[in-house]
Amino acid sequence: MSATTEVARHPMKDWVPSTRTLLIGGEMQDPQGETWDVVNPATEEVIATVGGASSAQVDAAVAAARKAFPAWAALSGEQRSAHIHRFADVLEKAADKLLPSIVNEVGTPVSLAEYLQVKMAVDEHLRWAAEAAKVDRTVHLGGYDKPHPTESDVVHQPVGVVAAITGYNYPLNLAIFKFGAALAAGCTVVLLPSPRTPLTTLLLGELIQEAGLPAGVMNVVIGGADVGQQLSSHRGVDRVSFTGSDAVGAKIMEQAARNLTGVTLELGGKSPSIVMPDVDVTKIAVEMHLRWSRNGGQGCAALARLLVHESKYDQFLEAGAAAFDQMVVGDPWDPATNIGPMIRPDHKARVLGFIDEAVQVGGTKLLEVTKPLPEKGYFVNPVLLGDLPHDARAVQEEIFGPVAVVLPFKDTEDAIRLANDTAYGLAANIWCDDPVEARRVAEQVRAGTVWINGGGAMRPDAPFGGYGRSGVGRELGEWGMKEYLEVKHIQWRV
Ligand code: NAD
Image 1: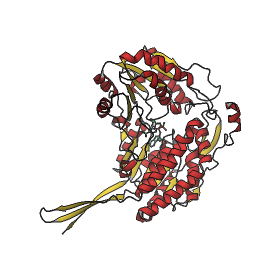
Image 2: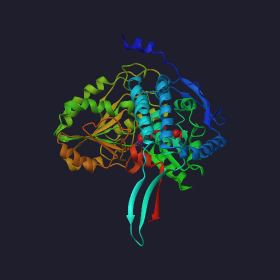
Image 3: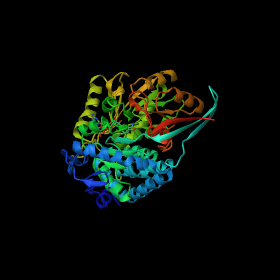
Image 4: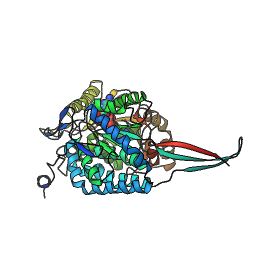
């Protein structure tokens, strides 16, 4: 069967959620704020017109979350766990809707989205959070004798109302990373997705109702920067958890600072992948290129800064050509496609601007896809840039598109210096055949996640987050849970 036939046959290819209501205090409410169009980035077609929350509706969502908080926090961990598992059951059953919703609003190729955008989020991360709800985190400190004998416990209590604000590239994952842990901790949530990809989150509102979560425990609003601003500076919000760009992350921190509200910020990166001289580059080059270009390069931890030992540089470029042959840019519904579109024309223009500027300052397109692009859709052909100084903008800044840069290094200390020479520190990878040396380098690289030889899947029990401009705090695992918990010391005389 040809790929085209499969595309034509996909039963949900044109499906988008019809939910346009917000979820506030257990009620589906018509939006009263501004309206805008949602565009499918692969076809440029308007697939929905949505309305955002008015300022009064944002206040109402926060008030509903506050009202629901005491009872939700008072449930046992087992009870909250059961609620979250039930919610995961509903999401699992709705996977056939979540998938097309995400493919059509984000443009992620269906081949990738099925696991990375849906299954992983629900089966692994939300289920893990449901189990984490049951954990008793009380620590008994034992006795302390000055000035008289006492004993102490440290207990953890939910912080309260969480504003969860997400970026566009993984709407379901990013939401689940936040509300999974927040609900498990005993917090209540107001969820705000990116205005560019609101449809999956609106559908989530309906599924929250279906799962029977108590009214107000999870609220869904949509809107632009003004709604994000109102939420992050709201006196009724106890914690802001944000995923997005470092520029907006800095604004969120300022806005939250007005009330001294704590923030968790999951921001961008310019993550390096280091190729040590002992590695057979013919075995890894293809994997490396197919990885940074995943989701059209619209991944926060994309390893798009390739640092290759000078002795292997030429061979690495030669071996990489096969990857560019395997890159299929186009219709996300075609199972053969592995590179979808950029989210909007302005983002496409920004990505192309990086490429043009790199060439103007002396950079070279060392490898690229040159096949004609579809007539419609915000597609960009992948490019590997080289011959750039390390302070070039294309090397230092997050491009968030199918563009990587490669630089040679002289020795390991040079590689570590270059790896650490950006404002970011989200992720890194080290290709190295010597496990002791790989570990030594991993310890030296300033990044929240360091993979050795490609690492593995995103673990729900491991922390994720960044150094420097890549963020504040951590998501996932016990570290992610702690972002939603206050720590209390209880001491008594004995
Ligand atoms: P963005 O920063 O443009 O927008 C993110 C969200 O912020 C949107 O919902 C937007 O409405 C809201 N917003 C905008 N201005 C605001 C303001 N003043 N106050 C409050 N909210 C405001 O990000 P994006 O383009 O949607 O996502 C891409 C970025 O996200 C990239 O930088 C990427 O690296 C990052 N990202 C990070 C992670 C991570 O886990 N570290 C994961 C995915 C994406």
